[in-house]
Length: 400
Ligand code: NDP
Image (cartoon, rainbow, N blue to C red; front, side, top):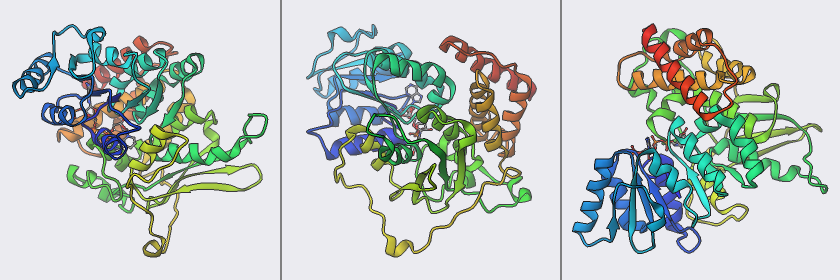
């Protein structure tokens, strides 16, 4: 079940499925607004369910499919009990996503929607007893306190898709002791490319443009995460994600700049040994590891070529030029609603930057402002988290 099938992670997940159709059958595809691509994906992968944000788009999608003789049905009800293979049942909106997530006949849920919209479908899938392959880091950052206990009580597996967290997950495979406990972790060393602005001075950063921020040196990703990489917000979100996934306190999670994106992350153990995971910068590798775990297969992902690589460099992040990383540690340590305030402020500011309504440096400034002025709460429920998200948007809109 792929949520966000038309995005960067979604299309790469489908590329993996295309390579291994025997093992990876697609049950459902969900998109936001990209109707043409969703239609194309439905024709190729023949899912039982498909979902799109807008009701009119759902009706239009059904009409287009039927016109060409493709078996499809849409009645606007988001009722999956009538779904059957051979006909795609079209759903719409958040209710559609929730119905898809709770659909009984599938094994693994791929969370590849961007933003906090992914929280509720992920929870619905966990409650339905599904294993989760999670790319949508905002879900863990804002609702880790709800998701992790739920994963445990529902007895499902949570597999990281983010390349760094997949790397840490793989490094920790060697840490399990015969009695099932884990060798203590001294530090998680989360690697970062440093983004496109790694070598820019503070003065140069004041004038960077949207086009510059969208040019990631190593990875091809969606627009929002590409901007997040340029501010190091992405790394900040990953620090919080790592805290939840691996149950390691913040003072044992460090960020190391590794500009070639060859080492995807490392774990330092108590005896001083460091285990690292390396590979080409190809998201299909962590995606297929999450989908096929613990199996590994050659599904055509890129290979690392050490001969042409020759060197690997290391550096530390500069908190003065990239303050958003320190703010993430602050938000994570404060806990409760503060990670949501951090994330929502970033979503708000990045959206303005993407629409050329604000400059790049306003992103970290907006996060700092929201964290300073919006009171922290426990954020124990999804409703509360979504209320804080809205409160943060409203605050920043009024503060402009
Ligand atoms: P993209 O922007 O490329 O894709 C986002 C996807 O979410 C699209 O399919 C989009 O649909 C869908 N979507 C947006 N809003 C809705 C909605 N309301 N209902 C249903 N679907 C919706 O993002 P990425 O693939 O880059 O990132 C996805 C997530 O994975 C993010 O949380 C990101 O941080 C994380 N991630 C991404 C990595 C990458 O390499 N790209 C690496 C690690 C993590 P549509 O296009 O049809 O509107």
